[in-house]
Amino acid sequence: MHENEIDYEQILGAYRSDPYGYVDISTAHTGQIRFNVRLGDKVEGTSGTWHHIPGTQLFVLTRERNSKSIFSTSSGVVSFVRDDLEGQFVEAGEKIVTIKHPLKKREIIEQILRKVLLPFPAPERARYFFSMEVQARIEKFGQRSVSIKPGDELFTMSLMKRDTPVYYQGAPGIIHSVYFQPGVSLDQGEPLIGICPPEKFPLIEKIITRVKAEWE
Image 1 (spheres, rainbow, N blue to C red):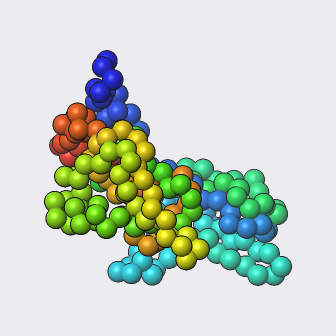
Image 2: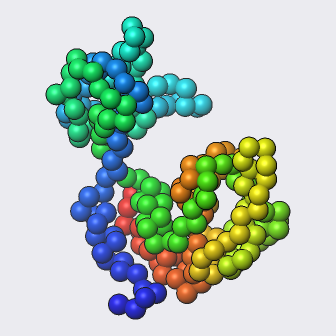
């Protein structure tokens, strides 16, 4: 297979065999744990116009007589649960529950794009904005018509009340996907955008078309 080719069947075959997403729920802090779900239970995710209605209560953490309920953010089925920890003291960052849910067409496309596009990661934990020139081109032509090359001033990084220009380093291409919200903090290493080399654009569009045709 040539460098610029994409193995459609391998990518799509993986989703045909396992068309599910998996959401891991971990402890945010230490505490004694009490479960409200078991393996195989159906759960509901956050709902409401403003996402103000919490999902199914998964477990409760109690620390220093203060209890905090942890709710499911996704609808699906409990595919993993550390029920062996019932009543025990758990550490922060422990994976406790996994929710399995059928992937929607949009989710499959987004996951595929994250695999095949070239990510440009955030150099530091900070807030990011497109540079004025890039933002103007996006507003005028649309992001997928904006080409970038190494050395272009791509972002403004806002950190500790100081704005710093961020220059693009990577292969030339177009801005295919945007993963950040302007002005919202992003962790270091998280992708800001997905870059598509021009020669790969028809191939990626072909994958998207296939997904739209095959999935409900």
